[in-house]
Length: 281
Image 1 (cartoon, rainbow, N blue to C red):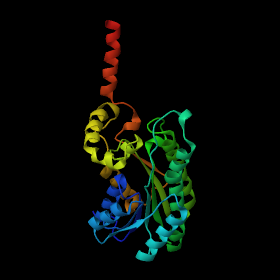
Image 2: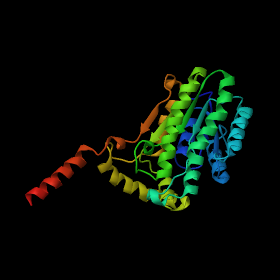
Image 3: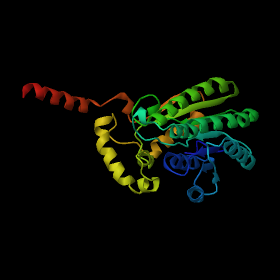
Image 4: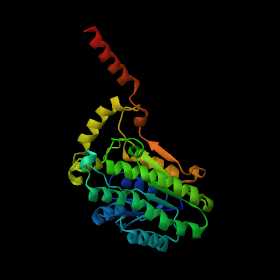
């Protein structure tokens, strides 16, 4: 506990899902946190819940001017900036590449990739002038390195975000600024429903049903037989934000319960036995 005392952090996409848990974890670890998101009512309610260490600023990360204003306001309010978590993201529906809607594709990239680029761009000046380094954390995804786990717009935007993180880390390290990304796997949030075309409020209300289904599926999909949850990812963010990771930059921290490793042994044994039964029938 208290690993972020004295640090000032900005978390975008902090009105739902992983962003909420990252904000909670940062406040619990002693940071002052500026929550950013488009939904003012949810953001202000969360800031009120988290207490005086948290505040909310309505921000659309696809608007470069809004991102710049968010970071300027943070420094004006707190006197400094230490951590930026580019967490805001937009899902895309699964479907054939023949059916890709160009406008929807660009919209996903505007949030998932350009929003992070704007954050890095405008945080760099503040961090460089402070002269004390800083940590930028981009929320990527295992879909950025593995096809078909998500829609093509989401996957390609996350692939580009991983590359952007590495590029920025290589440039900004000379200022002591670290840039890393986190790639979650099967993390149960309302975003799954949104990607399926369900309104996020409805998806959030049905989250317990999703969690039950995810627990059932995880046993045959990955090494750790349970889905991920927001606090799992938040723990990784706390590590990358704090001094414990002072020598870590340009890293893609995968938090997926082993999903990217392939199916666990038990699942492969069942497949082998089923195939053997075909020969013996």
